[in-house]
Length: 303
Length: 320
Image (cartoon, rainbow over all chains, first blue to last red; front, side, top):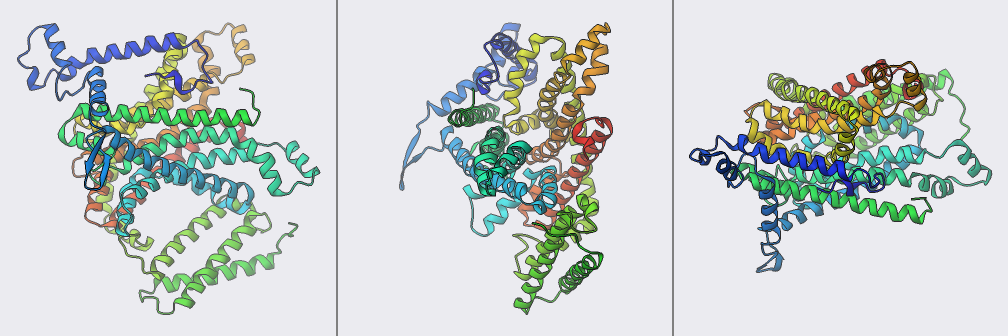
């Protein structure tokens, strides 16, 4: 796991060694834990000898705790070693046996939900910053809306939208959007109000209109805040898409893989779906970070 | 905008208008007869809504004699307006219960199914969410202290912690359900894992928050590591720690409920939601969600109160 790559701007060359040492330590502890965790399985009953028992514990088909290399191998087998496409009557489609198919199902809901949620979050923030009534009466409810365990609403949204004919992508995207608008709203309210009184006064002495003040001062000032909250939002959006796949039953998507894995005791499948979700999350954050660096550079920020 | 302050008479008139329209609408809503005069009905709804909005607007802009209370009155009014509008739209448009039950229906269901809801609440919140939250936060806190004492561990663990807290941790729920069984232990375990990393990351950030001057002062007093920690750095870290406690309160509720989607005994909020959705008993689902929302908000509110007591010196609290 390349943990350093997530936030390249904050970390200098220094922490590579501590991170490597701790990652190695965690992996070693994991391998060591495989035997005690799996010792009670029937397959392990007849294996004698310390070394043999460990080797057997690392090669079980349905272990309680799989060894890390088993997860990586399963991930490799279900992505690279499985046919990516499949011919059907409708033409060539992604093969549902391939994990990439499930990742794509989840990713498309994530991205759509992220787009809706970010747009909604920005719009709400603009409203809250410019209208006192909204800021007084809506802001507390925005905060309260987050103390409600929103993921619990997921089944309702799926069923309610399903009854009016929306199935598949849209309900999941709406769950993602509901989850990820919040950090964007909070961050953007902070960002849009970040110009201080002097800068706002300057705009006033230029006789700048509200729109001009917004476009030339507030929006650029809010850009760093925007990207910081987008990074949070994109991962929450992924969580929303995964959880949104649970109540529909195990059909397609990473959440469905988790659910079917837990039905059939396929632990390695669960872990590899998790690992794939982790990779997806870091890729999404990386993309937002890249967009952030390009945008801030074009705005003339010092890197 | 140079609108002047309302006189007492104008304010009185506005309140009477709002009360009359709202009362009329509520009276119409309480009547079980279906809507037969749609034009009049929607006009009434729109008028009541406009009156509420206008009242809120004068309240928030500081022109009303009641503006001193706007901090809690405005959001309360906004929430009530939403609730009434929800009820009015459900009735007026005859929205099927499957899509969106009216608030009155949900409230009725909450009163009717109170024992079941209470049992679910005990199973999910008291047994799983709160113990898991406490264990996860304490563990994160102590690991943060270890990180603080040994810089090598901090430099290694922080990037990993940042990475892990960006992951969809909820995905480990099926694994933990396999390890700890179907009952509340596995849900508490999910909550522990979910709450650990936010606490770790925030506490470490908080322990770095004390100023250099203050730290130098402590050193010149010859204070040991623990003394500095207790007298200076933990108090300075409190805003960060409370931030994590609040984030974790919501995460704990989500974790405990979603983990139940992967298998439970026949009690618990997540179980209730997933089974009642299957039976299309959407009012029961909404009732459970309402309980979860109330519990989550109360949990959060208690933490905010504690935060104001303990970090009374912080600018964000003093400015209130």
